[in-house]
Image (spheres, rainbow, N blue to C red):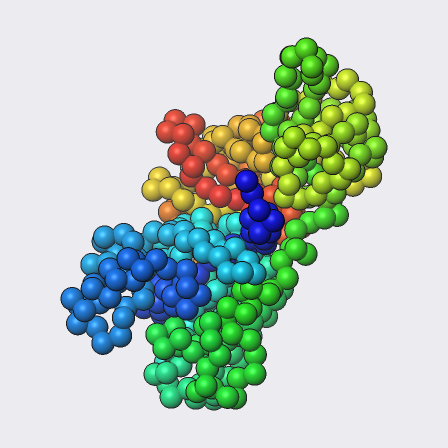
Length: 424
């Protein structure tokens, strides 16, 4: 039997965050420190890490080994893939996407960060802003991550000097002013020693802000979702065909935006027909209203032909509908983008075919320069591209809605996902 405490645990907020930084900035150590100090580690895991650390002859216990699960990484001491970690505190549940710092793994960072509420970008206090710092901040901004936390790490190696922190903070604020970052935070930490990660540092009395863990537990994320534009991409039509549910015809999907209420009018795209909501079901329960990101089944008062890929919206608040889609593409595949190439496009629950009409420019994500003369888009490149689809897509600007504003391209021959796109 499920107790009240279990219910509370299931209802807890889930914060997804991603970590990024240059090689050896201490991402893995930071995550290890978060897990260790918040008591999210099993005793046998800790014993294995202590043994591995003593074999290497490390003075301190190497907490980075907690997260570097891949053998090749352990041997080289670097992170080469997206590693997802789950942990919970009494206040919140967390999923961490630990992404690599190397330039050749930009696609991994995009993958790990695409669903994040928050990005932690590490900066080495001795080195200050690096090219990679700029790149990670740009990708976080491009992916519309609402909250960015710059952790100035290794403060123990600069004698916890406030002037070093303030200089790096000022440089980061200057660079970030060119980006569309909404909520920036700056925390001086030492992941190795545990300063300002979970516990407040006694060595940096000059810092009055919160610790990283306090910020992660308390940052407001409910407002990050779009509760204004009503969007329900239909994933599945439910027809039980049983005696009990003989006439039941429900439309199932995950709400991408807005609030759906019983009795309100909805419009179906692309047909344009309108009806009112007869009932809303979440699991076995009927509810009066539902909101993003809940998965629901809706029934309507009128018989309308609706199938997978259609979208239920508000009649007085329609998404854009077009066959010409302007996107920022991050290329994920070894084979470069083919000009005039044909691909399958997946957008919400709708699948169509498309052609690359034009590459507008390629982005240098280190300097933020746009290259209009070099328009070849290869692995890990980001560029602005115009697509022409076989049927109209119903979308919002990515900055307004990350779900209805994103798409992926699939190679028709190999069925590989070759690109992730943000609609501009």
